[in-house]
Image (cartoon, rainbow, N blue to C red):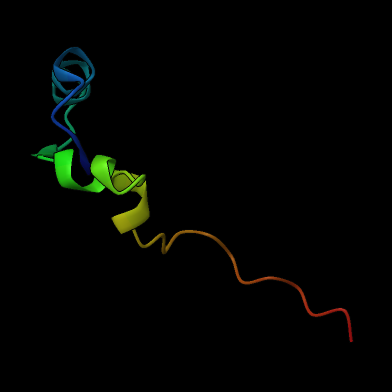
Length: 52
C-alpha cells in the first residue's frame, strides 16, 4: 500500500497488522492541490453495470 509520510502512526499500525507500507513524499502533490490518492489506480472495484 502507498500512503503519505505525514501519518507515521497510521503507517506503523498498518505494518503491525502485516501490511507492506510504502510511505511517499507528497509535498509536491499537495502544492498542486492533490495528494497520494490522485496517484493511485484502484483495481479491486467491479466494473460498472451497463444500463443498456
